[in-house]
Length: 164
Image (cartoon, rainbow, N blue to C red):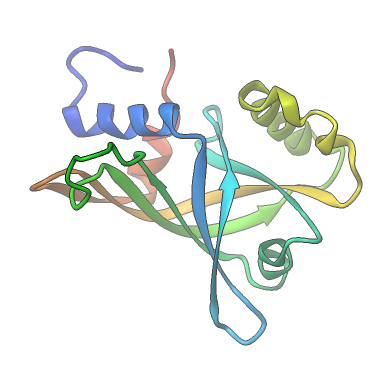
């Protein structure tokens, strides 16, 4: 819900998630070394979590299957000739859960993802791709210079359940 009386920082989170379609995904490999990749994401606004769709050929998918601990960062794109130190961003920690193919949760994730990325329909039908739900346990929002805060799991789940 984007009510006029909604706090400015909450509106900033929602605007960031609506306008940015890719995130940096941090996973841990088999040797517990960090690995960062780029993933398109959707938001399941009913359940209050992120959806990603990844291939088994990608290192981050294998990492997620071995260890579900993740970090996700969504950041506003850089504006030429503008300072970059206070770019709005949301850094999150949480866990990833692979959704069983064909399950109701998988069907919902597919609908959410295709609403944002209709061009990915053919990829959602390939057997080596999986949907994951990313559940945020904590987050840190930077909305600009001097505007930062920590968000817990409940606050994030609520923020992810906005309505148009």
